[in-house]
Image (cartoon, rainbow, N blue to C red; front, side):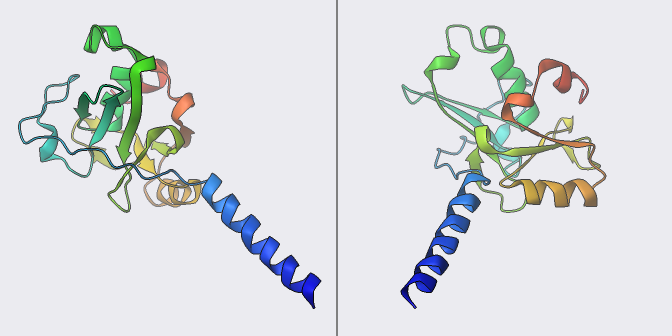
Length: 161
C-alpha cells in the first residue's frame, strides 16, 4: 500500500511541477500614474488597463506601455527610447495577460500574433499565462501563431504596424 501512495504523490507532485513550468509567473509592479505616457507612442497608459506593460529597473525606475508591441519596440531599441538605460539594469518586465487581466512576467508569457483583436495601437501581441490559453485564443480569434519572449524580433514587430 505504501508504494501506491508514494506513486500517487509522485505523480501529483510531477504534474504540479510541470504546470508551474508552463505558466507565466505573476508580477507585483506599481501601476502607472494617471498621467504616465508610453515612451514609444506617447499615449496615456492608464487609459488602457487591460493592455499595460511595465519595465522596472533595479533602481526602482518604471516605464509603462500601452501594450506589449510598444514594450518590445522599447526593449529592442533602448538607446533610442530611453537613452542612458541598459537592458542589464532591468529587474522585471511585465505584461497584462488577456484572460485574467493580471500582470505576468513577459519572459515566460506566450503571445498570440495576427488575431482579430486590436489593442490601443492596432494589431498587438496578446499575452497569455499558458500555452494552452494562447492556443485557445489563437483558434477563437483567428490568430496566426504563438511566440515566446525570445522569439519576438524587430522584423516580427514590423508585421504588426
